[in-house]
Every structure is written in structure tokens, then in C-alpha cells.
Image 1 (cartoon, rainbow, N blue to C red):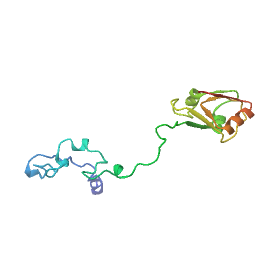
Image 2: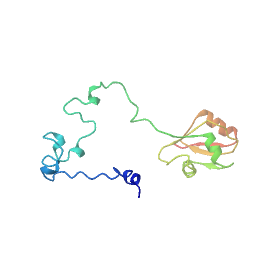
Image 3: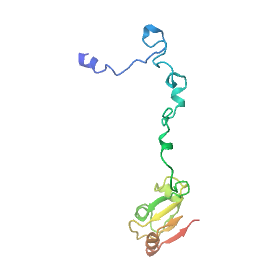
Image 4: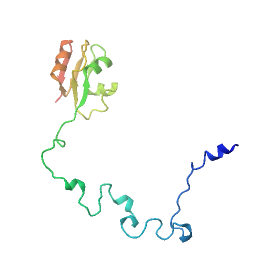
Length: 151
């Protein structure tokens, strides 16, 4: 064993700080928590949110609330392009949300599927989805495929 092999491991394993073990340890009495205040109380780390600002008015409440947000009501779609369908499905294939999950184009069937027109296809695909862009519908039908809208 050489000296450089010993020193490279120094600091790799830090000893745990054992608090509340008497004044001689340097971490006795208040156990490193200081005097009074929320930080000295039990349960402090679990009960105080990251956004807590003491007695100050929180940032979120300081800003005026105006306007309308559609976030609660909008429909989020799982988006699939025609070029992805062309790459993963054979001619004459049945394309529906379950098949899209099976080939890995969408993660699950909870979101409705929307087909967009990026790319081209020459395959006759029978595509079933919640929405289609006008250009995507045109491209699929031009290639001899069919489009079915799920409601």
C-alpha cells in the first residue's frame, strides 16, 4: 500500500454528527439548533413549506390577480405526426390509441389523441383518433386510408 492510496480515501466517509450528547461534544444542550424560533422546534423541517416567508406577505399574494387562465378547462392532447405513423405501421394497418401505446408513440390512453400532418405517407392506414388536423386528414385520405373520429 502506498501513501497516495491512503490519502485518496480521506473524506470519502464522513462521520455522522451525533447531537445532544452533552456539552463536551460541542453539540449538546441546543444540539446545533440555536435558541427559540421555529428552527429549534421539533417537526420544523416537515411542517414549513419552501414558500414560507415568515410574517412577510408571500410572493404569490403580493401580485395582483387579473385576467383568465384556461389551464383548468383546456384539453391536453397526445400528439402524433403522420411521419411517425408511416414509420411504425405497415400498409393496411389499423391505427387506434391502443395500437399507438403498443408501438410506443404515446405513453397511455388517458389523453385523447390528435393526429398532425408533419411528414408524408403512402400507406393505406385506417386511423382512429379524437382529433385530426385538416392537412393530416387530407394526407391520410389521399394515400387511400380512412379517418375515424372518436367522440
